[in-house]
Image (cartoon, rainbow, N blue to C red; front, side):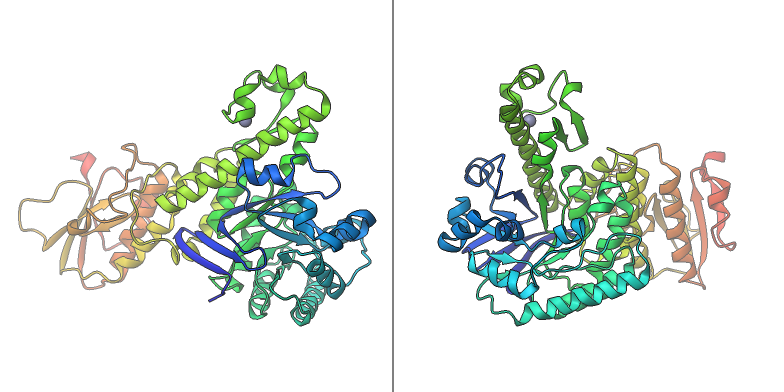
Length: 491
Ligand SMILES: [Zn+2]
């Protein structure tokens, strides 16, 4: 168990947790948002982030501070908390981003970690190599080796109570991400950013983001706090939380505001295109879009940044509530409808349903079947696995209709898409209490048929009859041939 991180509750791969940051004497509730502060120009002051938005933690760049003489001297003399005037926890980045952008930086891991410690950072970062997507395997492996050497160098630096991150790289090679995760987890470092996914997010490759993060998480232990580095847009936070990411940083709130872009949980709007604000945050409640457009540049940027932050923090609260209520995947389904590439991301997440199933609670309030992707949720998978363990009689009717009156069968079980067959005694237990639309879709029927197949194949001595409501021939054909079929709609 990692001392700095405790998981309170889980839903799918998502978790509510507490990150203890000893140097700041602060406990941060996760999932948490870390607004990015540029020490040279803050749109919203760190004090305002804490007081008005409830920010418990922020992130700033120690490499920029290191390279800006007056800020550096002030930070060394008075400490970062004083310079920024922020009471919460402060994480610092190391310049790896600058390394990725400009090709070189002039500090070593030891130097920048000692500097982060000297200026009073609460969570410091070594100089890893952020390998971009789609590079050759040789390059990804070689750079990963360098990153791993730097993590080992970071372990040797005396950083006192400061937590230190261990970035997980590996480009778009899932096996390298997993290996990197395993290596990082074996160090005594504390927080685990999944690095270099920004280029994927900038290109809307959410499916590749999911594959990279889930691979990293396979290598990391379940108790490792995971930071999705550079995940700034609130549209994808629910998806990221469902993968098991605990920390998000956002520069987007300020960067987008600079270009008159207005964030929503369903995507980005241009201020010029808005006649009405679809939001009731203090900014949107006080101004109309026209009034904001007429503000002077600096004021307009600040107003939009404030709105962008309100939306972003509200989404984090919504995610925490969803994890608590067991409805995180329903929130992800809603967000997946915002953009086709988000849907790709959600569908890819469901490819990893077996991994999500491990942390998904056995019982929750309700299962709402709200899209055909719901047929692939971990609850369905878990029910199918449970079918192997249920005892069955010699002859069994599986039916979407009522129980038969006669004694033609030893027993009759219900069949309900997307779960498939189950003994009637289980019908009041989660997830079989699911709310499912009356107009069943093909994906739900196919999943139910998979359940039937699984039950039949694990009970070779039982005679099965399936009474279904007009299942399509292509799905019926996938059932084992020995299942007797009755079409209830044909009677
Ligand atoms: Zn607003």
